[in-house]
Length: 365
Image (cartoon, rainbow, N blue to C red):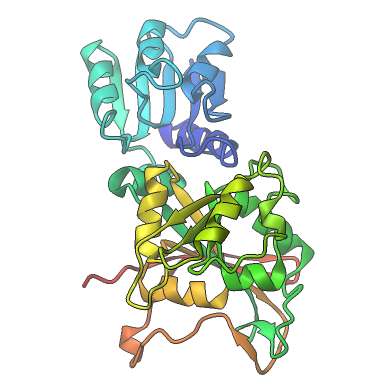
């Protein structure tokens, strides 16, 4: 078998931790000796053992002389767990194959150097593109300190997210709803605007899929939220943060704080609304590495105007609504050459719906 074969196995293992490990990266490890897998593991939960340790603990025979495949450079620092590099070196493998160097500046290159320094043959860059794509959220956050932003919405085939009367439940299929809940579990936070909150009164929790509840972030520039909103309940299960401005009602601010809700005053944009980039920076300071934006139309449009999303997930239902609420409003685009361009990552059918998963090609100023 080739290095690529075993690295693909490591990547499949790594993906199993997607709903549980953030803000850590997804990592899988496979240990091979004489053409046989003698141990494998993945990072299962934030705060738990890393993939390499789980693989080492599972081996059926001594690792000495074996090859260890890991999709990400092993850590060299003490965090919630001891550095993996010490256990790997102690196991005395003949070779270590790494998909890509770590993006964390306190790790980058140090694990690779340590392996070579101890005489362990080290190969770096096997399926590197796939390894980087798997952990694109982690890589962006490590590089910028700003969360990776996924913009997701469901629409009819003619681009509507609601009818002219405002009715929107349910545009997408049951299978797509389950997919949406799984997507929430893959992000540290889920974000909506106050309009969506007042219209739909969502819980924004993970109920139709396995995984952790994300931090629920509401953009409410003037604190119009009802104190009876469902999102204010059960803070022990899922926390809520309301992003507002210094123009908001201070008495309402105090009442929300009494309910255990964090209210964050963010700098305003030119329209005296929450500045979205400032909000993302504040979330980054709270170690929120990824944000799923679920709407509504005003937030979707503002995010696109400012070119903040990294990923776009559109659920297209085979329904025609006619006149209704458009998913995306005015972007100020005057010619086709100015349009935002989407690079497809995956297009698939789910139930009756079509899921388009792409990355927005960022324009340079």
